[in-house]
Image (cartoon, rainbow, N blue to C red; front, side):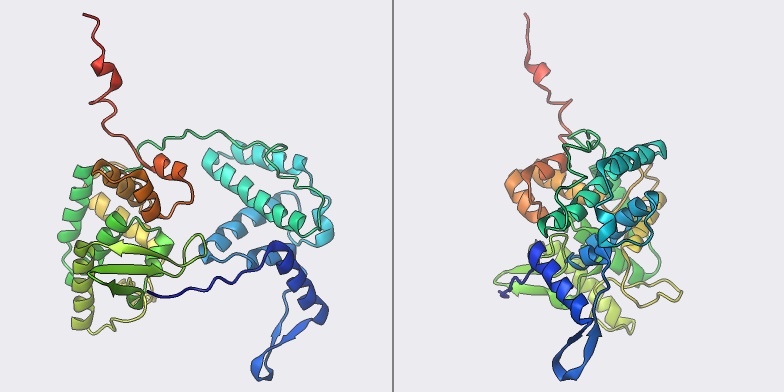
Length: 340
């Protein structure tokens, strides 16, 4: 079992670290090399504190959209004090007018709230203008209906992959299908998987995820069927002259990306391609496999807490929102009522 060392900065220590970098302008490191300090840009300071690259990109997109909306394409610390909850409410309302989904709007509000929370904690601001007591998000239904893929469409998608004429592409995409369905991984976690991340622990196989949403390395158990298809894919790579090292899932497109690590967008496009070939009318996405993994596990008898650990959710409520009780109509409470 690998040992992991947690090493992090609190918001206040992080800001002090950045301030010191700004004062010295350059930071000496081993071998007399120097790295240029981060400029005094609050957004860059906030983004630098994020441990996950995918989280950093999401925050950056949300915050740049907000600051552009209120007229700050370049931001300084002095600008922060002039931003009020009225700005954020106006931004929220404009997003709604522009047709953004409620979940997207709430995510952007959460990004803004997290941004200001850092500078409040660091003592640069007296209050958070995005606090939920000042800016209300939209209410979201607790059950996300229709996110899990039913068994028949799932089989149809797998069959369409098995009809793929290119044997290497087929081997890769079958392995991808199984890691999504059994592992319930996020797209970013799939694309960051490396062959060295798979290890045997006794009689079990374990996948170490070095880059996760939480920023902390995490492990998941790999079922034997998943390991089987990963081995077939690895054998196919070797047979076709590709190195079976580095990132597991690589692009096999006949363009400039050929042989390079697959992108998160590519994972989605592959899933959609086979769903379309299978004639599945539902708009299938890779993230729906995460919902499917949750639903199938609980339907198979797993405890919600077990599924929570497997999907690596901080809160059990999140896991239960992923679960869809597909028997709620066939085995409904009202079926047990008898008025004679």
